[in-house]
Length: 230
Ligand SMILES: Nc1ncnc2c1ncn2[C@@H]1O[C@H](COP(=O)(O)OP(=O)(O)OP(=O)(O)O)[C@@H](O)[C@H]1O
Image 1 (cartoon, rainbow, N blue to C red):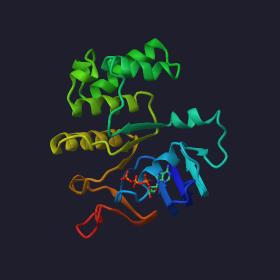
Image 2: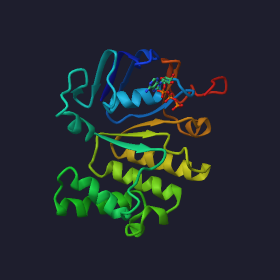
Image 3: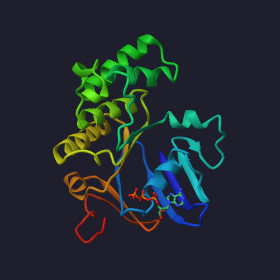
Image 4: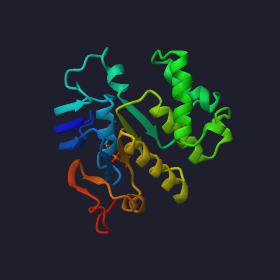
C-alpha cells in the first residue's frame, strides 16, 4: 500500500513541485496518474522510490515509513517495487534471459528459483521464444515487454510504469497496457504515469489527475475527458 499524506516537495531552487498531495493506493489496485508536463508526476514517483525525500508530510510505501527509513533499508523497500521506464533501460549486451537472470542474482536468488521464475515471466509477457536474443534484435514493444518481465521477476508488490508507451506506436501501446492490466489481474498493484488520453479512456480504471502540484481529480473510469489539458 502507498500513502501520501499532505506531501509537500520543494526543490533546492525553490520550485514547489507538490503542494499538499494526499493519495492512497491499496494493494491490488490499478491506477493511472495523469497530468500536464511539469505538474508533479515524476516527483511523486521519485518520492515513492526514495530517490528524493519529501519537504513535508508523511509517506508510506509497502510497509516502510519513508520519513524515517534508514539508508540500509532503502534497497529492501525498493525490492517491493518493479519500475518500468519509457526508454526500457535494458542491458544491451545481455540476452533477454540474461537481463532477467542478472536482476534475480542481484537479490541473491538460487539458480533453481531463477530458472523457474525467468521462464514463468517470459512466458507471461509472451517472449519465451526470444529469450536468447539481445534487446537490439527486438522491436520497441518487445523490449518494453522484457523490461516489464524484468520488473516482475523478483515478484514485487507493485509495478510503477513511467510513460511506458511513450516510445511506442498506438497498437504496441495498447498491447503494453493490456499486459499491465493482466499483471494487475494476477495480483500485482500497478501505477502507470501517462500522457496518453485515448489509451487511458480505453480502460475503465482509477485515474488520479494532478495539476500544478495538486490532485485535482481522483475517479474511476470517468475523469479523463476532453476539457482537461493534459
Ligand atoms: N531537480 C529539480 N530541480 C528543480 N525543479 C525541478 C526538479 N525536478 C522537477 N522540477 C520542477 O518540479 C515541477 C514538477 O516536475 P515533475 O518532473 O514532477 O513534472 P512531471 O509532471 O513529471 O512532468 P513531465 O510530464 O514533463 O515529465 C516542475 O515545475 C519542474 O520544473
